[in-house]
Image (cartoon, rainbow over the protein chains, first blue to last red):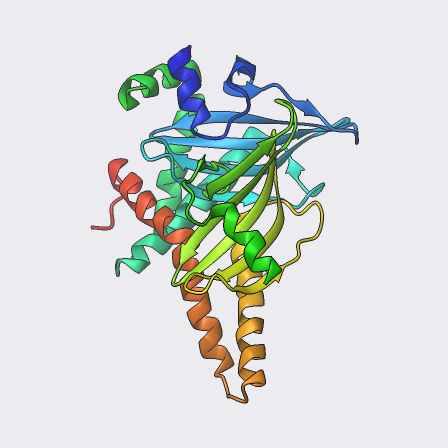
Length: 155
Length: 155
């Protein structure tokens, strides 16, 4: 587990001992921390073909919210893109919403980056490909993805 | 003068203590009173002869921005200090746009004081370019490498 801990540590995930695999979410989740307001906050993380997608989750009563999303490059640990909602203005949580936000953030960034290099990319086409990758990755067993990434990245 | 003296020990001549995954910020000072408490950090970005000093507060599933200072690198003089509303959630987009607004204002004020005219639009364009490079250039470079690795190519 030490190698897995080292991997997660690079992405600002809470105290590593608190990370567990949730079968129902097919994601790695941290122990939520309670706030005096009565809400609790935590993270979830998923792997997607060389990326790590980290979700900031707010557990309220009776709803769960997506408060933010960070996308990292696994090799370089670089923060690629993020969307952070203002406090108490998070979106209702769903895996579909996570995929939609991640697709939009990545597609926009890729198209912008290509433009900077003087290349044109069709945003719809990029978006379709990114969505395919995320659909596939989110349905893959994330425990196996973790093992694979630990080996590939040499942790 | 007091400000300048107070700022110097924070990071000048010191080695970074790490990188904040939630913000991409190079950290120079970090304080956590209790393992389950928030982590209070000071981080610095360096761009075009200027330090952007950001104060952040990181918890589980949430990161707050608590203050920004802009410092001229050559003289260590403060260009401006930017107050941040309590409970502001951190995103690079928010910080970059806040810095842009205050830096443009500072340039305009200085020009008025010296009796010089400024091309407001040009100042905004240049400041935007500098900040965009500082906050997002690495992300764009990295995402292009990732895109090519998964078959999303500009060619």
